[in-house]
Image (tube, rainbow, N blue to C red; front, side, top):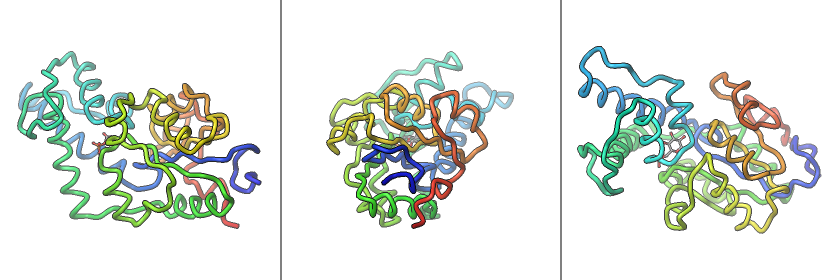
Length: 246
Ligand SMILES: O=P(O)(O)OC[C@H]1O[C@@H](O)[C@H](O)[C@@H](O)[C@@H]1O
């Protein structure tokens, strides 16, 4: 039943990451993080500061909950800041303040420029649902609902586990598998019968750690080898490659 979707037999649910898999928002997040961290580092270290790189984004920030990303990157540079609280204002020199500073810039960009979906993913989602498989969106982003609503795609997912739900339920974020496991549980399927679709290395690790039936790495930025090394069973550039056009 699922071979025309490029999935092994026995898969009954598909769990999709959002940014970079469903929508072209991974680049918007990456740019907002870079602008925020570069301004922070310049102010701290002067004009010969060491900028935030693509590799910093992939290793420390991509796919992780907002504050985890701030913490991991600062630790990589040996910088310690007080934690603060999630409602810290964007000016606060705290982990949460820096995260909220980046979020203000991100939302401004999203509201001005809008959000673009990946058409290949939308077609694939429709095919998956037509084949009777269950679907979930599993994102670290607390902006998931707003992003999905802006492309009218909320209804394509039976279950949503995002940054807001994870916080409410006290679930640790990717690379830990808990958010994906919660989505499978809510859908009533064993992880071995669920496929994970992810573009971030942290998400690959979550898929591997959760023993999911199939892990698809979506390579939007030329990191196919790294996706494989972090747990992808198959790497595609776009979900259209998996089929589902029937
Ligand atoms: O800050 P938000 O919208 O809650 O998102 C948290 C993280 O969500 C992930 O989906 C993105 O890959 C990260 O870049 C982002 O930092």
